[in-house]
Image 1: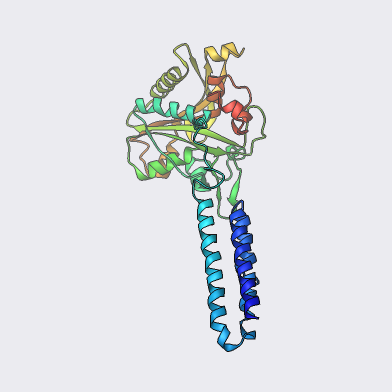
Image 2 (image 1 turned 120 degrees about the horizontal axis):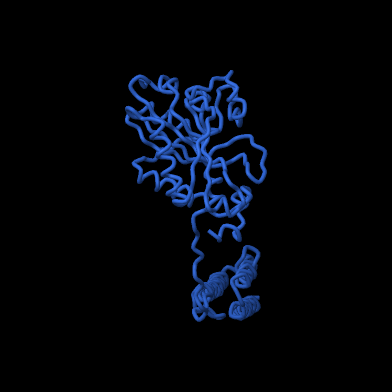
Length: 336
């Protein structure tokens, strides 16, 4: 019986080494390992016959079975290492003779490009940049800006609430940042505030529920309407060219008094067949806003303005549909 078992172990070793050498890849090699060295493999089956042998033959058989297992284990490890190395039997996984691929370099979104240019111009005019949260409270978004709950002007902006009972909502303009800045800083104040805003507008070619604004605030002694109009006209001519014409129309905003709408006439608009386009709102800061932040309206005056970035981008790039900015179509975005 001992000779018969010895022949079986020799056959297992020979067959196992042959199959290891013939394995084409790591999955095939793993299948060979399970077949011969697994819990129900050939070597384990041979070990299970050990108790059937006479006691004097068991040591010799055990040693032979261990030699068979060790030989197969060593061959498996060597073959596995060969597959995992770069110079395996099928050659390197990376073909170094292939031409290189240039990485795709991204670029800023057109809205980001316009925002950056707007901020650069205002920085040259002496403005610093302020930022604030997209999620605001009713106090900063409305009340501190002289727009209480019963104010008619609030209806068109009473919009996306996170927690209605607590008065937490997505900001409808970047003006709340002006209140935050004035609460933390005494005049003089000269800041520009870029950021995303949210309103329940019907989405069409010129409106979106999500949009971007740039607002500005200048507070100091003896700031006048002349400062407001002069700075706004200078800015738009820097942005759109010296031939740009600026027009101010009386309007109403609860947080400024007097208030104005700003209309533009530029070469780009004239090429598109339009004479004037409303582009921004502005005015002198309402004394009630100063009172809400602890400024003395008898001592300080100031102006504020706000404009939509998308509308400016549409003028600069000749785009006729605001929805193109948000469709993530690379054919569109790669033009800028």
